[in-house]
Amino acid sequence: MRTGPTHFSHIYGLFVPTLDALTLIHLPDGPTAHFKLSSISLSKDIEGHGRTSSHKPELILNNFNTRLGHTIGRMFTALFPHVPEFQGRQVATLHNQRDFIFFRRHR
Image (cartoon, rainbow, N blue to C red; front, top):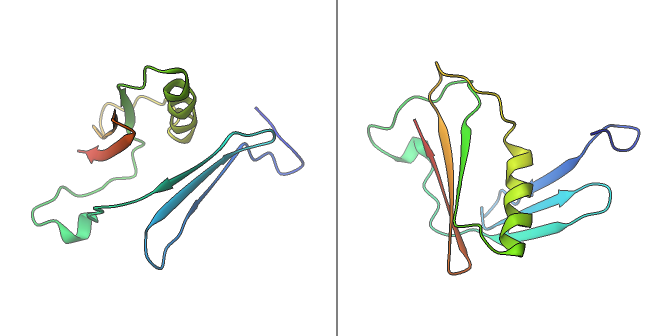
């Protein structure tokens, strides 16, 4: 899908100084979602974590069953293009539970 003169379809912002919020904007007509972030663990802070690679992770969406859940799920799906790379073996999991979305990247 091409949108506008620059061909952007999504904009996302991560508020870096405090790492406390994430905003996803789907262009040109929305929707826009704003998420509060909590309990963040960066991979460099975890002992014995696997090395990251340049492979694109496959996405697992769990429990996005409602109408709003489908909309949010499609927004996250657009951020992770479906390009199966069997050598990289990375998975990004988004789990929805009681209006909280848990994210984890597995290797």
